Image (cartoon, rainbow, N blue to C red; front, top):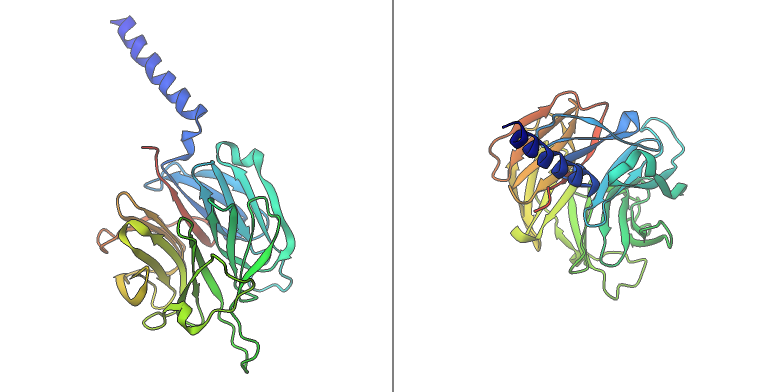
Length: 311
C-alpha cells in the first residue's frame, strides 16, 4: 500500500515538475496592471492566489501576451494625469520568469502616451494608439523601426479636436487593424496591406459612428465575428460585428469606469477592471453571471489579459 501511494505521489510530482519546466505555470491565469503601483500581477481564474508578476516603468497602462512564444509586452505612460512631461515606454519579459527577464525595448521619451497595445506575431510588429498625439504607431517586436501608421487628428480642421484613441487591436491573420476613438465616439478599421504610411483615415474607414459613448478598450473574437467594446459612459460593455453597425449592449450594471477587458474565448466569459471603485469582475458573454472577483485589486487597475490553459 505504501509503495502504491509513493508511486502515485511520485507521478504527481513528475507531472507538476514537467508542467513548471514547460512554463505552464503562467497559463490559465488572469493578469492586470496596477497603474498606481507600477507593477503587473497574476492570479487564478477566480482571482485567488494573487502574486507579483512584473515591476514596470512609471504608470503602465496596457499589456499583451504572445502565448506561442511565452512573452509579455506592456506599455507605460510615464506620468500621472496630474503631472506634465510625458515619457512613454514599452517593456517585455519571458513569462516563465518575468521579474528577472524584464527589458526595455522602447526607451522612455521615444513615444508619448501609449494605449491599447496589440500584437501582430505573424508579421512581427507591436501596435499601439497614442492618446496624447492621436496616432496609431508600431515597431518591430524588439522595439526597432518605430513608425507612425495612422494620423487621426486633422490639423487642417479648426478648431483642432483631439479624438483620444485608447483601443487598438489587430486581426493578424487578415492584416486588419481596429481602433477606438474615445472623444469622437467611433470605431475605425483599416486593411494594412499596401497602405501608404502614415495614413489619415477617411470617413469610409469608420465602421461604428453611432450608439457609442466614450469607447475605450476593444477585443476581437473572430470565431463569433464580434468586436467587444467598453464604454466609459454609461459604464458598459457592448458588441458589434467585425463589419461594424449599431452596438448591442451586453451589460451596463458596471459599478465603475471600465479600464481593461479580457475574454476567455472558450467559455465566453469576460474579465474586466474598473476604477472608482477599483474592482475586478467577470461576466458571461450574454450578460449573465456578473460577479465581482476582487474589490481590492490595487491602486488603479488597468490592462486586463487572460491566458488560457494548454489544450
